[in-house]
Image (cartoon, rainbow, N blue to C red; front, side, top):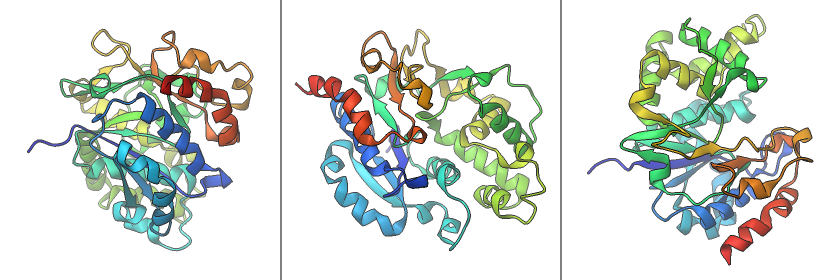
Amino acid sequence: MSNPVLNAMMPLKLTGSYGLDDLNRCKILFQTLVVHMRPGTFDRFDIVAPEGEIAEIKSRLDSFIVPLRLGFISETSLIPELGKPKLPVRGWRRQMLLKLAYAEKSEANFVLVFDADVICTKDFGLSDLVRQGKGLLQRHAIMTVPNIPDWFLCSMSILGIREGLMGQAMSVTPVLLSTDICRALAEFMRKRFRQQWWCYLISLDTSLLRNVWPKRERRDWSEYSLYFLYAQRMNLLERYHVESGSPEMPAMLVSDNSVWYDHDEPAWRPQVCFSDADPAIFVVYQSSTGAKPEKVWARIHQFVENKNH
């Protein structure tokens, strides 16, 4: 039997990092997926959570389990080291490790990676994301996002890659990852560092040398910069991906009309995101803005409910 084509995953905690209400935030994503996603798009959608929180998370997401094919996986089943007490790896760094680990171990061909602050705004199905064995890849200029240059400089140092990026990088979550590329990246890093790749990346935050290494050189990596740099170096991007906005795949993954910072919110027009004027399937209302889920839902509920009716 051939592999399932597409899985989805999302790291989740009852209370997200820095006290954010990620559980109720992700319900907005799920409500919009139920409205917009065609049946059978995902083979499964796995929630990756701490072992002790899975039962409650599953109970509170019960109404979405069947329509979205939700599964629940413990963090430590992917990365055992995350079960160590007082391990100072939390928040978005922990999530980055889990995203790569899930994609490495997935039986699907591609994994669509979500965060809790993503919202689905368009009807879509499998053929909008994966076609002829290639997954949608969205690029943007490196200098358009403040953190991205450091992410790539650090990841270049980790991987030992010196080639320039030509000013382009892959976008941020939601992202489609090839599991073949993730497995090849994992093997490359295992051989380079003679240990599990996640052990090495965790050591960058836990080693006694962490305060000696400049962040830009070793500690400010990201999961997507590692993935993109490795795939580019090994000439795998064209083999496994097709550009978003191309004639073959006109859809975009994430909207340019997303709310990334507090100052974006006053000018945000969700009606544009939900219209044909915006080619993106998803928009982000970033949780780090501190906006409560109730506020976000108040801004978009009319478009979701109108679609329901």
